[in-house]
Amino acid sequence: MADYHLSADELIAKAFRMIQSSRKGYYPYGKSDWIAAIKKVYRTDGDISAKYLQDNYHHIYVQGVWIYGDWDRALGAAGFNPERMRLRRFWNQDKIIAGIHQIRCQELPLNANYMMKNHPSLFSGAVRQYGSWNAALVASLSEKALPGNSYQSRLQLLRTLRDCLEMKRKRKIPQAVKLQAAYYFGGLEKAIVALKKDQRFLDGWSKPKIIKILSQMHRSKENLAYANMRHKFPALLSAAEAYFGNWGKALYAAGIDPNDYFVRHTRRKRKRLAANI
Image 1 (cartoon, helix red, strand yellow):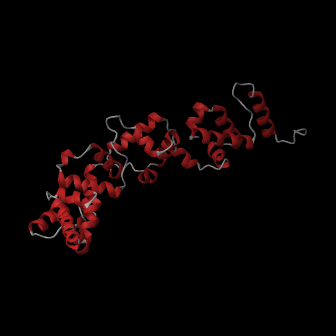
Image 2: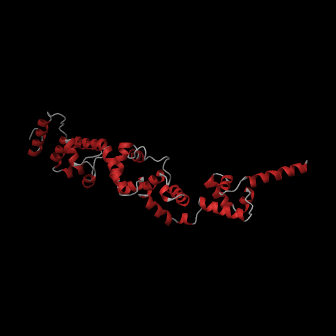
Image 3: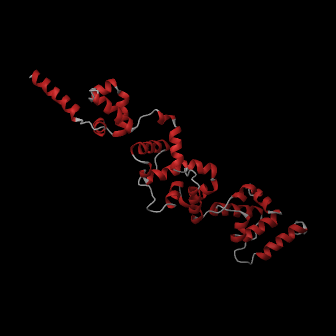
């Protein structure tokens, strides 16, 4: 005790660690060494729960309890919250896929924002294993279940869903739309409810609405030439171009021959040119 300047308990602990150091994989940690070791396990494995360490890093767990008196004090000394660490679990790829399937079966949203707030452990484990949350979602789907296009924004999805409901029967909604509805809202039915409550879509434009208005204007002998529409009905023209790509395609979708308006305009120009000559 005089040579090492240690109390009886500290001297016994030091001697014990030196004796045990002959075991394979064992290292006689001091306090700072042990803290560095536990932080390294956390960085590489993402799990420092007592059970996980007892199964995989038994000597680190035993020495932490020995040095600090109990496991909670050991975690606290290393800067971890014992209560939060008890809630953590190690996520390998099989557990991540199973977790995503369980959430999908419960018809809960699967977008990153919802997952970070409600399932942070699963989310962080998935990002650690797959590099991103969307990559984990793709990994959880079979080849047949993969959406044909990349995920749209929430607003784009609702717009697509509205068009599907207005133009097709519900049972013919594409699988990609159903998957994205599950991603944002937890399921197709919940997405439909959200759509019906969204004021932007109650009064907004849609393909069927544009087609209906164009058909009525055509029957009323309204001039549907581009220049006239830009002058008198700019909102309708902008909506038609946004939904159909251009004015001619919008007219064609409404069963109106675009040439009835574009060709005549060209003929007038030719007549004017002929008169000037």
